[in-house]
Image 1 (spheres, rainbow, N blue to C red):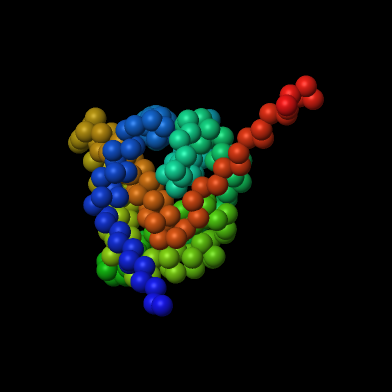
Image 2: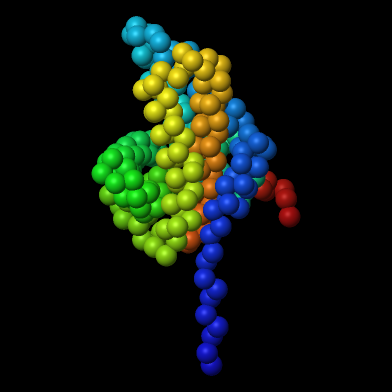
Length: 237
């Protein structure tokens, strides 16, 4: 007897981005968004200062922001409803900070070089490597296996993955880099800060959308160790 073949997986980037944006303004993701926006504001206030204390503060805030993104990925890749502080605690317990940082560096350098060489090359690399950060967090692997896994998972789905990556990562970061080079903050003032906040929101939307795409493509959802059941007393039952 022939078994019907499974329906092909369809990723709709518009829906993933829209749902990610909607959920980002709801608990528990909303609190993680607020934390990252506060970090962005603090980093912006430190950008013109070059003393040692400011540098240390900027590094510390960047580390906290990384853990927020790890927590956001874990939450987006899970069906469980947990509070924001529980996701942050899990992000620390996960032990993937350096995996996340190094995979992010390798991915961004590869995409940046691809964009410099040929714009379409950067977009193609973004489509292939777009799931690497999620893989590093969910599967607790280093850059090389994370990249290989991302390439394998995205095969046949590079257009939607690339669209999400381009809209939520490449576009906002390219805009901010161009603005920084052209010193737009002098001309735009508060509008420049608002633009940075929008870019931060878009990036976090991408984190959520790509985490959900990863799970939809057969990736590993977030596993949470259940709490141990209470011990029964000898007088019971």
